[in-house]
Image (tube, rainbow, N blue to C red; front, side):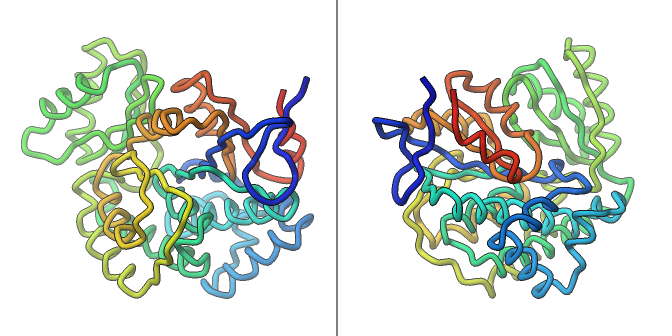
Length: 326
């Protein structure tokens, strides 16, 4: 027998019984040329999101998302508003079709801004301006070639922490993403990260790979970006919200609108605690997770972290049928 998200107002339900569902939103790295085109073409609600983003930013976001070129989409100050826009466009289409209401929400790094928009804490037009500045500030915080990020597979968190300490030699290096499933991302000064990669291989890591990103995110090298972000957020209004947001910094539910800005500022320099965030969803009694936005990166991570959770992704109209789950 198939179960489904029941169409209608209020809590998401399974046929015959209530079920708690978490919405999650992807971060940088989920982008691809062509994302969002079908949303724009087939949903008036999604189209409105794209039009609002372009009006606010003065940026040809539709062309960048739909046609590229990839090099332009990969610019951090373009990537971040593009992913946010596609994620919220997908959410608006989903809401217009199914009127879904999650039990809680979360987002990976940049995705936390999408999560905050989804619960009404941030207005979309404010969020898209902030993340464009966030991308610019992060890009400018470290000169090209001076920073690096790498993913380490198959080592425990405490081992990676010790490796970073050993590799530091007075330079900045730290865990940046605790993604779960044995995947930990490290970030910092280029030479220190290269040393850590070599040590990780010596300690039996299954794989160690450099990441093709434009800056070393979520480490102390981002302090200048966090200070700039604090100034940007000072002019943004945060509204009270009633659906809890699991934050990257604490991996626990936040319902205090007065803490949102400080948590977002801190997020820029602190690791993303994604594995703990997913386990928090389970602890809260969530049975399903719906990833909303481009790609399936989070779906793969969540399946490895908590196999008991039923996970689906929604990136566009073709995924509507995925609302029906076996």
